[in-house]
Image (cartoon, rainbow, N blue to C red; front, top):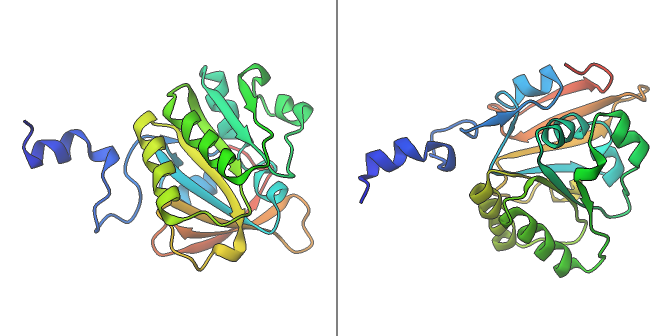
Length: 209
């Protein structure tokens, strides 16, 4: 049986310690240098990432496309469970996403959608799951999704309404996305969790790198 010190050493990327400021573990570049710098180097794998917006399309538009392209090009599948923000194949293809590796589930039943997200994570076949959900998600369910992501080293991208911003969440990274004033291609990003101290930045969606 491993000692506690050995466990902490060998499984460090799966363990959060109270003094840690950011998730520790493998990271995948977001495709935006400024965002990567703000969240500690990129999206943390094996974790839950919450993106809070006033509308699902605003959060997903261009922001997640680079990382989804990276994952599909590496041979990973993406499970996509949208709400009204249906993915547009030409946009995905233009972003470099391999459409053959995208699985879209169109169920509108709240419990079925959460169950599908968890099962996709536990399958170990998916590099990421993208779920838009405007209904209430209980803390135990959020923790189940995070645990399932951790077990398969996948990323659970959960798009929720910004109305839940004041509620606690087990997410490793939590950001709020709003349109920047008078700039169609810019987004105001507020990092609510995953940066220390919390900070805001304006992200140019055309300035990938």
